[in-house]
Length: 457
Figure 1 (cartoon, rainbow, N blue to C red):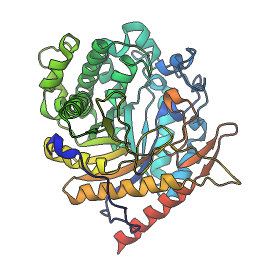
Figure 2: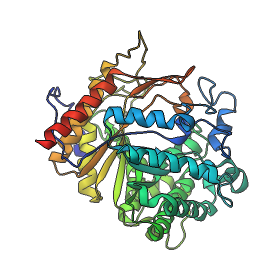
Figure 3: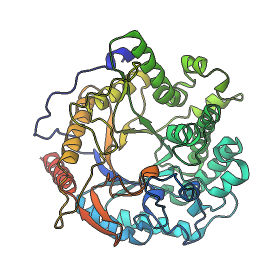
């Protein structure tokens, strides 16, 4: 799909009737270790860069940390019961690298492997397929202090060693393994804008980090293929940029934004090259490559994870034109625009011909309030409903989508926002760790049940 055709009108009002998904479609929810596990100093876990980032004054908006989070490390069995109640067939979680290998190299932490052993067995006993991610931003602090983290090319081999060990131990029980979650965030937010850990501000560094992340993805895929037959892939985030006005300046700016986010990661993974226009734009800040790097990044994959929340609205005016927000904005200030998800999935299918895609994250932050045991979150239900219709429209247009994971199962630590932003289907009272299903959880539960009923005929 040519880039300029992506500027589509807002979708018509979505019908109340459910779209029909295939019987084998996987319904799930997603979390990440750093955001929910807690037990930061228990079970042999080493500190991560996010533990250190939280300790730096002013980094986290509410001054919080991840020492306890949702206490999932101790409450995982309860959380799996909540997944059962929802009727989930799949659950996406991440392994904590510092829990499994506290130094990021060297000795393995058997207590950490035992925790994930219990979690995976509990999921399987509940009839829920475990989909794992190896890296969701919680780099072992020792690796950052010792070699500079992802700035060092040495991180590539160390990540591949970690991936191989996880695949060797758990590969026979996992429904899929993703190498990285949203490498754009690790590179750009972590090393260019300073918003995320480790909080650096250098475009050249960020672009070199992005290359090391992609290279470590390819190396990890190669290493895991030796150890497991589990489906392997990567999870990439997409915020499709739309020109605010039909003027050349906005079109050019949107094209560059697309190149720095979507094409910078999709092109090397699926086409074996970095986009030429972006390389030209970066100039001296472009990453340094070695012979064979691009071939190593371009590994055959079994699936592609697609994370989508909103679109980008690109205006070159000063002040910039704001997004229209016909369908509203969430508590992060992100516009609800489900038509962009349909266009994105169709575009990825046509331009890259990827393996089956999963919607690995899609969700809405809402200013939820627990009132007399209930969280009335009608806007989240509307967001869910509209985006499920958007996925169904993309599938009708030829996109192969195998499953949908709502972000997130639980309210949790939302990175630099701390605990102020709530994405969960379950409300978490952080004072007592009580989980309460929101109205959206009831809606999603009923939706999944209806899908299964219709599939049975």
